[in-house]
Image (cartoon, rainbow, N blue to C red; front, side, top):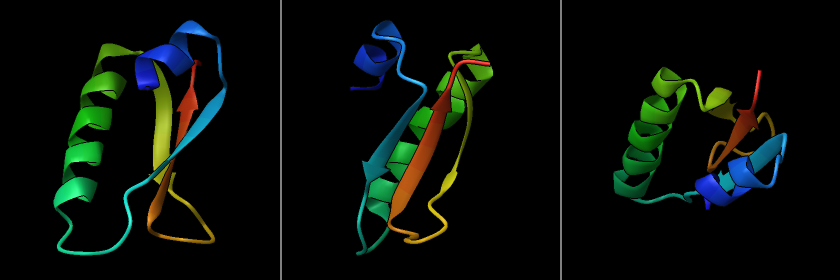
Length: 60
């Protein structure tokens, strides 16, 4: 999904990882760290309104 958002020039995308044991949250954040290191995304952070959502800013 993130690759498609980058391809279609989205500026922002949100991932809903939900609550639980944090397994999916860790997987999402690990993948986002890789994309950030490669320069494919500008930044990411938890949503200010709901920590179960991560907001990803694409581009520079």
